[in-house]
Image (cartoon, rainbow, N blue to C red; front, side, top):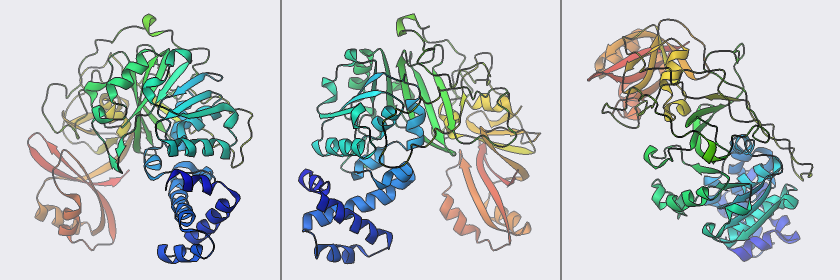
Amino acid sequence: MDLDAFRELLTPRGLRALADAERAVAEGADAVAAAVTLRRTYPAGLTGAALTQARLRSRATAKFGADAGVMYFTPDGLEQATRAEVAAHRAGRFGPGDRVADACCGIGGDLLALARAGCRVDAVDRDPLTVEVARANAAALGLSALVTVTVGDAEAVEPERHDALFADPARRTTGRRVFDPMSYSPPWPDVLALAARARGACLKVAPGVPYDVLPADAETEWVSWRGEVKEAAVWTGVLATPGVHRRATMLSSRPPGLSSERPGLSSERPGLSSERPGPSSERPGPSSERPGPSSERPGPSSERPGPSSEPPKPSSEQPGPPAAAPAPSTSSTSSTPPAPPSALSLTPDSALGDPPVGPVGRYLYEPDGAAIRAHLVAEVAASVEGRLLDARIAYITGDGPAVTPWASRYEVLETLPFSLKRLRAALRARDIGTVTLKKRGSALDIERLRKDLRLSGKNSGVVALTRIGDHPYALICDPA
C-alpha cells in the first residue's frame, strides 16, 4: 500500500470500499474472491488498500480492542505497536499536561495512549505513509487537538523543548525483527544521546534487550500481560524512580483473595505529576547491589534467573508504576478508552542475599517472565519461602502451597531423571493423555517429545523439564 492509495482510502469512496472489504473478511471470503468482488466497484489500487486494511484491523483487535475497528495500520507498524493496555500503563507515568516528544511514532499507538493520559504530543516519523496513518488514527479517535505528527528524523527532535521524551526505535526491517540494538532505527547509541538531553525519557525496547546496553543510572521495567512478557521500557531522568534500577510489572486483574499487603508486592502506582523524583543530577547513582545467584555461574542465558544484582524481597514500601492519568475531555469517535489494567510491581530488595538452593519440594513455582527478565527470581522465591532447584535456572520449589501472583504453582507428583522410556511409562501409569510440557534449562525439542511420548490416557498433567546440577530431570505435576 502506497501513500496515494492510503489517502484515497480516507475519502468517502475509500471508506465505502473499506466497509465492503471488512464485511468480506468477516464473512471469511477467499482473498481472491473478495478482490474480484470489490474490483467490480472499485479500482485495483483502492481494492488492494481496502482489503489490506480490513485484514490488519481484524488482526489488530487483539492489541487495540474495539478501537481497531476505526484505526489504520501498516503490517510492520502493527507488529511493533504496543498493545493498548500496556501503552496506557506506561502513559500513566507521564504527567497530565506534559508536552511529550515522540521521536519514532510509527502508526501512533503510543501517542494515542499519551494523548488519552492528558499529554500533548509532538510526534515524528521518517516514513510519510506511517505519518499519514498516525494522523488518521489520532483523527479517528478524536485526539487530533492533542497531537501533531510530522515527517522527520528522530535525530532532529529537540527534547529540551519538551517536558519528556518517548522513543520506540524501529525494530523491524522488511518485515523481519531486528534483535541487535545497534541495528535499531535510529541506533541505540543515538536514542540514548536523545534521552540524555531530555528532562525525563521513556525508551521502549524489546524484552530480550541485552543487559549490557542498559544505562546503569536508569530504571528498566519489564512488563508482562496475562503471563506473557510484552516489552521493556527504560526510564531516565525525572521519569525514573529514585534508587530503583530494575522493575517487573505485571498487568492483570488481581487474583481473588490476594492482599496487596503481601510481602514483596506493591499495587500502588503513584502518579509522577506531583511526586516525581527530581532531576537525574539529584538522584542517587547506581547502587552496589549484591550479585544474584547466577552472576558468576555459567549456564544458558535464556534460561538463567539472570545476573541478578540483588534478589529482591518484595517490599510493600516500594512504589509501583503510577496510575494512568485522567483521559482528556476530547471526545472519541469510537469506543471509550479501556480502563488501565491493575498493575503489580516488584523491585529489588538489597537486604536479600543469594536465594537458597535445595531439593525438590512438594510444589514447583514458575516465576512470571517479567520477574525473570528483571532478575527478581530471588524476590519471588522469598515471597513463597522457596528455594531454587538449581542456582542457574529460574524454577523455584517449596514445601507449602504459597499464593503469589508472581508465579504459577504446580504440585509435584513425581520427580525422575529424564529418559523418554521412563517418562512415557510414568505418564501412562497415571493414565495421562494430555500433557503440558514446560522446559527451563533443557535442550529437548518439546514438539518432538510430545510426539515421541505417544500418550492416550484420559487424564491431563504438566511435565517440567529441567536440569539439576549436571543432570536432566522431569517433574510430573498437577496445577495447584
